[in-house]
Length: 87
Image 1 (cartoon, rainbow, N blue to C red):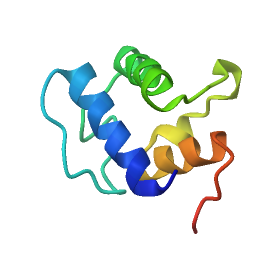
Image 2: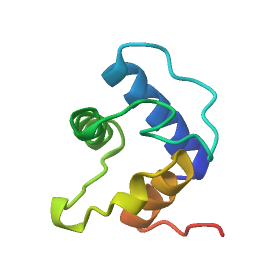
Image 3: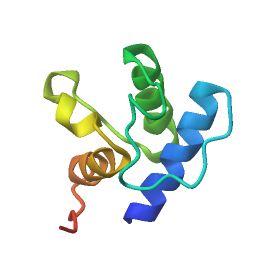
């Protein structure tokens, strides 16, 4: 799985959770500030990604720094799936 695949899956998840189209995300888009996510929508997004791309997340290992932006979240997903994260 590459970065673009993760971003596309994230766009699909956010479109479903936020009930509005979310497209053309870039790495610097802030999940909370720009997209107005909250803890509930974040959990819904994670559940959507569990179903759509098989993401498995241990709630004990969640770190707020992983959810700052599309870029940090993409890195988190790739690391969680055991993929190499490009610098």
